[in-house]
Amino acid sequence: MALVFYVAVMAAALAALRAAGASWSPEPEVFRMPHRAQREVCLRDPDGVMLNLVETNPAEQDKTAPEV
Image (cartoon, rainbow, N blue to C red; front, side, top):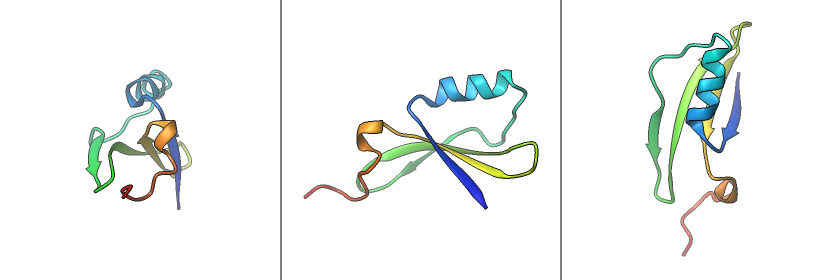
């Protein structure tokens, strides 16, 4: 199981998580798709649940395919 969280600014989210004691490896990666690119990073919460942070513009969050 993984929980996915969409964040507008990955750097700010990671800074807050790091200040709270979180760590992750590797650093965020860019995933490229035909309709957009987005940064993602995975980490685990204290209970071991996988968290996936996805940086996305809220205005494009529902965009799932290239516009024609």
